[in-house]
Length: 280
Image (cartoon, rainbow, N blue to C red; front, top):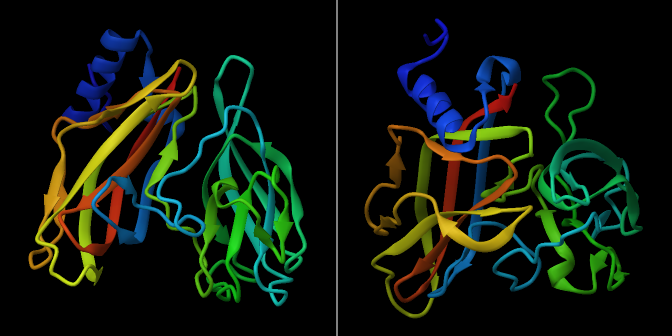
């Protein structure tokens, strides 16, 4: 029997996880929602992640060990902000463990993270004072990266080394992608995708296609679609989907939203949200 706090959709997802993967899970044990959102101002005619990366990087270059160890700003003025970095470490068996940590910026000088990561999924400026004090926007762009190719004036020398960034003038990263730890499943309850502007190409993009993709971290293999592709026309409202039954992302998986345009370069945004269910 489902618990009183469970909707029929949650109860069904729990049953499917048990029958498909052999795991018993609980949302009551975790009590945590997950909301991922991102933007990409330069979506072209090939699929790329709806996220902000360094330079012209269109997708994250994933690492298989805990190489993400550094953070710095492109501006010498960013010297007092505390950045909260959320991500995952990986062990020798390929299992992800969620980690949240803080780092105080020292301008363009590299700061070494206390815990090096294999995945960096979200970063934001920590509020100061009371809980309602909104943090000041950053002067420069803050980069979170693996320092294998060096850094110059706070900017990683290799664009592919950057796994996450907070754009100048902002207080939070914009990355419509994340990872799920080896102790959790993710039940997706809502998806949104849309276009904000046509930014190049000399014409009007009639449509973008977007898709959700997942990949097993420990076992590797190709990215596989999660559900059907999404479509959106520039002149219409965003695509909003509330899947029933809920979409299930298995434990220890990466997930991302990618998009491509028909013709012009467009600015696209995406978001997906749901709840975590812990293995018990």
